[in-house]
Length: 247
Image (cartoon, rainbow, N blue to C red; front, side, top):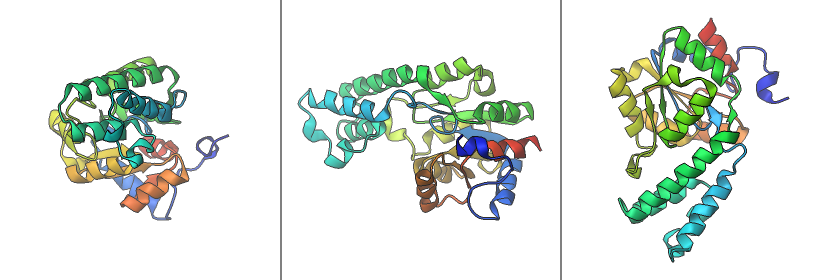
């Protein structure tokens, strides 16, 4: 059993004050913005993100562009790092557009084996049922998000508010562009919204947009990264969030 399935009481990871802080975050949220890969599902659960990053790097090398990536970027094992690195050096180029499309294709392949985050589906449905409005704000392709949500019957909980990666890669989080797009489209006040994310870039984007932030950390390492970045409320399961929304 995982730590998510073992947990039975509505508590959060971390300090004793967090249950009250979690309750306050949820109580004040009229609009809930979700990062996709992590809080909603593990997109690359059965389709290695590391392999995808290596394949993208190899594709660049095959075009004589090995020197374009630093060793750190090459070894990051994160497809978005490779994509951003190319965009910084060749912004708006056909090369960037082709690499972005290759990543989208890999993400679409990954949806077939994506693993739902424990308690995410019932939390999404419950939050919708109690009258909150939901949106996706992600660095993944919106095509990928729609395909996954369709497979889970969750599109009505979010549509049309799915804001993901465009070919303007300077707008990827930690830039708040997708967060601000969601807020503007929904006519939402940042202070009456909530962002759920699992990386420091999610936190920084929310902070830049003035939106309260709830960290989701599936592992201790992710939790430490979020706390070190300044996240004050971090849960290791969405179960206590679901409990708070239901009560």
